[in-house]
Image (cartoon, rainbow, N blue to C red; front, side, top):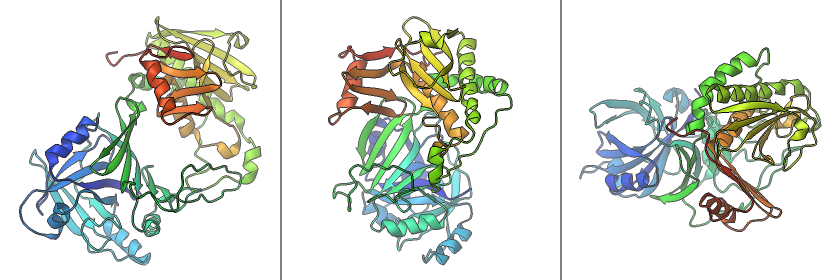
Length: 467
């Protein structure tokens, strides 16, 4: 496996107090154990590999690791996991770095088990913030709690971001098209952003809007930022031990996600000979300019129509509602589509839920999912249809799943006031029109609390956690 972000190291004074802070923010923190050098840790982790390590001095003695941790507070280092630390050392030496020797490390857990690894410092001292250190796990760490947080994004403000970029690129991190030295993706798909982001690189045919870019980061910007997915809850932000932390609800743990095995089973039956296809524009590879005016194989997108049929089959099969094929012209959409509708299906659930409407457009090569009457659009896939915007079947199918998870989750979907619109998504919200600071979030909160009723499209969940 390619190199990946492994964990962020955060020095704290008292582990129990730090664990309480992170847990109070909805981020479960549990004792990890003690290291032979005298440090102890608490881990913030879930079913993913990446995690946060809160570390403190556990003994009143001196060595380089204890002294570094004892004298620091907040984020002090981070680790990149590799499969072969010696091969990684050779690669970095060839790239002009001076990696230290690989040394063994271990931790004894509260249960008495020993977890082992090999580490290699790239910076000049243990837990050096200027550069990450390498870690090769020799005893694989068992998965974290299934309902624990999943790290999805890491933002860093290192003293020399170009030097960090050189290191990550040498290890095989993939650069983004517009910020090839500031936004990179690891082998597990996690994004690492190095600040200051600066100006984007122009990509032919691409359009980039950068808001708030600065030549230098603000003085009060945290050294590290994280986005973590949690089982439930709204978007939230916290400053925890010097780390800016954002949390969002993890779509994989929505109640409606329990239908996914049935959806997969129905999809296998319904897709016929419709094939998957890879992302023709992997990270760092921009589209060709002519692709923006080309739609080479639109019939492949019928795979998305098969996925929507599988969702309808799963919902009806679970006894959650009924499905009715209707005349497309009889359905009123708030924003009508210029594309001709091939067929339209309406899913209706128990009283209090919103009807879910699925429209297949342009010979079933576009899928539109919406809720309510008249129908508010939750998503259109593919969102463009040109070859330049093709992200591969896996990404498009995930977007279709997200639309159904959102529709079946209930709650507030849309708030309208004049020509301004806020639409909730699984990951936050999108808006049309101008909004003041926190105004869109306030609209959604007021609608959820019943303090705003005009222009609100909302319904009960189709499933509960008890279903």
